[in-house]
Image (cartoon, rainbow, N blue to C red; front, side, top):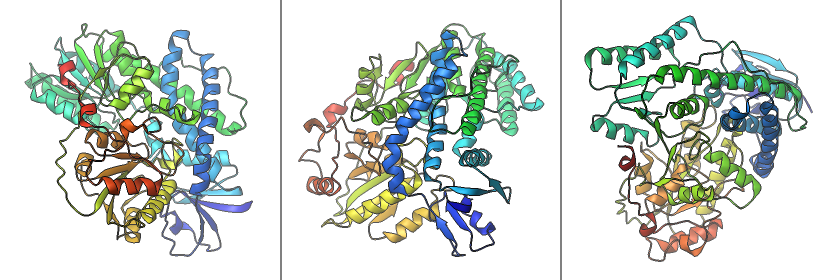
Length: 567
């Protein structure tokens, strides 16, 4: 056990250490260590080996917490509360278990907060401190979650939210309209543009709670009311109405050694707030849209996974409005082991299925078809919304391999996603393996930045190490990279499915025991001999001891697009 351990949660934290004899533990990969301090890092092999075990631990804690919560909520609310808590608790518990596993024992932990090193005397208190620090910085996972547990709303925000109720009721006044969960990510921009082209009334959810943006949204609503009587395209925001009667869980303890009492108490307090915020969102959404007639609204969702959109979806159901949930992400059958089955369920909740009744579900791929069929859920098959015709005529002697990784901050969502340290280890191993091939290969890396963990500097350091084989993607759209590639490698990214939809072989590969395609290795899904660069693809399979999955064009045929159903 160490006496004092400095925790580096940002790559520049090291500059605040004056004593060169201090020992550091870094949550950031590849820190620039100009002072030559002793820096410890998470062991990616150890965390990978324990990942599936942590999924089982997380599920056990989740079930115990849900049993505790169910004692304090009404029967009719239980299934909805369970659904909104599932993604939230998966994030919180998986990060907690990951940090508890990787952090060395020490008598005193020091964490840099507001340019000063603050002492923590237990792992639980340190993890709570890390959460608090991360919640204050935009782009961090805890910053996203804090909006669902925050009770503090200024008088101005409350006033603006009340004013919006008045404006929305004037704006939508008996006009049919489309309500979109967003218009900036995934396939939603294409839906928005098509509806706009067809001169439909549109209102788009904006999750920002910045006062300046709220003002701007209201200004545009007023402008539409005054100058566009017959047609509108606007945004709206949601602010919860917090009731004085708040839920208090009857018990704050569970019997589980995997989670410390201090963190459990902290988590239960957050859960109470989370449920109360969810109820508050429902109250506000009802006020916004209660005057709408039956089927006046068509809600189009890419997800209803968290309280804001889930409550909106629930209120649309209560008000007898139409709504559509389009498969988001990639969903495959998982039967390999229990951690993978649990992961499959986690990926599906609010992304391809929901407890909210009367939602029309749409599947964009055979894999989603298979999952929904296994769940006995009715759904409509549609063509992939973001599909771009593959015009790859690249006859290069190189085999172009697109690696589209998905890294989750602080080891979030174990087993089916990699931590940054696991990802970097995996890419290094992959590049070294591909160097053994007897033909030329280009490995194109496409990965999103992750605050404090993956950035341009780190990607360039990987590039410099393997500049004979690795290139960094410079395209904006993933479809452009896919169409230039001969195959794609990723662990569980949406890009696996997108590549297959473009007739590009895909392989589930990473530093994990999870295999996204574990149910698809029969001869029906193997790469055909007439595929371009077949022999080279087979050599990659043998080298990595993994199979590519491929669907023929006949298997990809789908009759309808989403607009056949929502227009």
